[in-house]
Amino acid sequence: MIALTDNSYLDLKAGVWDTGKCSGCGACVAVCPADALYFEEGEMVTSPKSNGYCKQAIDGVQCGACYEVCPRVGEQSRETIGKYLDLITAKAAFDVPRRQSGGAVTAILSNALDEGLIDAVVTVTEDRWTLKPGSVVITKSDVLISEAGSRYSWWVPLLAALKYAAIDKKYRRIAVVGVPCVVQAVARMRGSNNDLVRPYASSIRLVVGLFCTETFDYASLVLGKLKAEKKIDPTQIRKMDVKGKLEILMQNGDKASLTQHELRECVRKGCYICTDLTSLLSDVSAGAVGSPAGSTTLIIRTPTGRSFVENAIKNKRLTITGSADIPSIEKLAESKIRKNSGH
Ligand SMILES: Cc1cc2nc3c(=O)[nH]c(=O)nc-3n(C[C@H](O)[C@H](O)[C@H](O)COP(=O)(O)OP(=O)(O)OC[C@H]3O[C@@H](n4cnc5c(N)ncnc54)[C@H](O)[C@@H]3O)c2cc1C
Ligand code: SF4
Ligand code: SF4
Image (cartoon, rainbow, N blue to C red; front, side, top):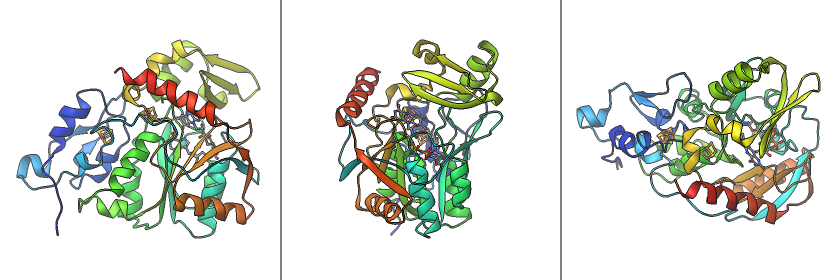
């Protein structure tokens, strides 16, 4: 039975692109069977574009794939931590030099690659010199380990890389690492009956969701605010961390920071309506808040998530360090909901 729908990109354009709601997850770009959707390069690109060749809008052929997977169609959840099986703090049991928190995400995924539980990881890396982010498909644990750490000036249509992994390479056990809007799009793929979306859903074995308060436009933050305005050379940045303000550690040990006020104009517009901090629809979510320094908070939500975590512990790749401080996670989640509910 063919299950397709009547919505075309024109509905997405009217309801999401033109209203400033697009998160930039890239799910619509990934699933378009005509490859008609794309992102332009540049500063503060707020949504995709269409080259006009839409099977549905032009030929009247039923499709609806792009609309089906968009996380910005419908209401946003107002839950803070959501449903879970276990909430722990953990860290990698081996050295992950570039880890953001405890390296737990890298430990779980590198163990899964080595054990043959997954074929590939779809995630975001960055150019070491320019800090320019890019979506990638990683199949080797040593590459994954060398690419640990968070990309805050993330803005790449991450799920566009899923097309390469699922359709071009035909990987059937893919792990996706993403911020909450990406996780929501993957959840829509997994719940879809649309025949054009199903090959994506059936290829995804694990979804690791990162906590996220907001992300920044690369050109506005790195090239504009840091390089041009503050004269901070991106090639000399060792690590960035967002803890209210943006904390920057330079290669030579110097520190710099940007206040929330300074960061505001670099925040991607689609983040202003986002109310999901903890990646409510993941298999396992990971964040810094709720853990002591050097550990990662892990919200284990599904039996699949639990089996990946347990396997990493069994193989001595991941160590549990304690239980998470739930009130501090709730507090941050509530403040995100409060801040973004009015838009
Ligand atoms: C944009 C952004 C905002 C965040 N905001 C918060 C916050 O406000 N509060 C909080 O507690 N935690 C936040 N986090 C999560 C936190 O920074 C860590 O990612 C998390 O604690 C896991 O740490 P880890 O050491 O276990 O991960 P690591 O072992 O360092 O692994 C991180 C993995 O995530 C992948 N990755 C990095 N950036 C991205 C990205 N943008 N999209 C998809 N995959 C990516 C890497 O490729 C790597 O595989 C944020 C993360 C991101 C990317
Ligand atoms: S939120 Fe994602 S799926 Fe929706 S229009 Fe934007 S890029 Fe496409
Ligand atoms: S704040 Fe929301 S919309 Fe913005 S990147 Fe994070 S999850 Fe996506």
